[in-house]
Figure (cartoon, rainbow, N blue to C red):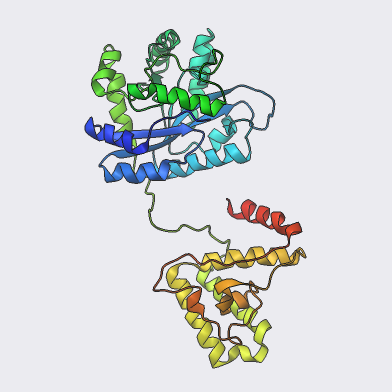
Length: 403
């Protein structure tokens, strides 16, 4: 659903103008903006806090209209960032039913390195407070405390009576459990002037007309990013909740996203092998099948060494092994595979691995058209599979290597 009307550049500009040391991005169920936000925040001298507001349900496999609740999670470490990505991915692959949902089992599995905030009015702790079930709210909160590195009780105030009641319950939970308070802002747009734009966006996202009295609509115009002074006026009796916003920022480590570098899945190699070593071994076996006694000729050995050296320097050994793996899978399953097209036909490595069936030496095909150390590009092997088996191969790759 279209629910956020903020642009990353506007959020960062606001934070920089306000002298804020850090800024969090926690989209609903997804992390689409994480890399862009990370780069632009760092460029502006703002510490990026990468997060996700996940949808939590009792059982992710339940496809009934079981209730789900929001929960705000922020990556504290690089491991936490990876775990957030896993939670978001699993929410779509395993728990999707109208929303990408996770459950406590998944949170326990991928909770390391993550800071948990108790959430907005749509979260479970506030919901239980509003239902008059404080013991259940306490139980859920303590379960979060068992799972995550750090847990905070969120205080929010957007001029809504329900939030006042939740804040009272949250303060009581803080006194009972010792779990710290943190002042939070459920911002869905950057400035107050963006409230109407956000309202229109909600209409688009829900497919409703603007003048429909029954459509989804936020209460008031307070869901914007507030200044430090505004937050201090909202929570004058709880300076520790404001101070803890800084503590959260200071606790978060740089998650170390490597920008401008291609990251490939790792091919599962036998113990004791590097990717380069295992690729070399498979090529030697493949050349023996392809060329027989000619496999030991100077021409073949020189070409193979040149290609393997180039592939190794560029870090693409895993890529070739993965392509070899799924092409082999298709052929073993009697799924028709094309003989090879495009520049990959110029690779003796691809020929040895039976990724292609065209001998580059026989046809004087150039490897440099496919992979050139002077031009750092990802290799691109064009492979044709029969229509009847294509989806099976894609499923195999996704299940084994992710996607």
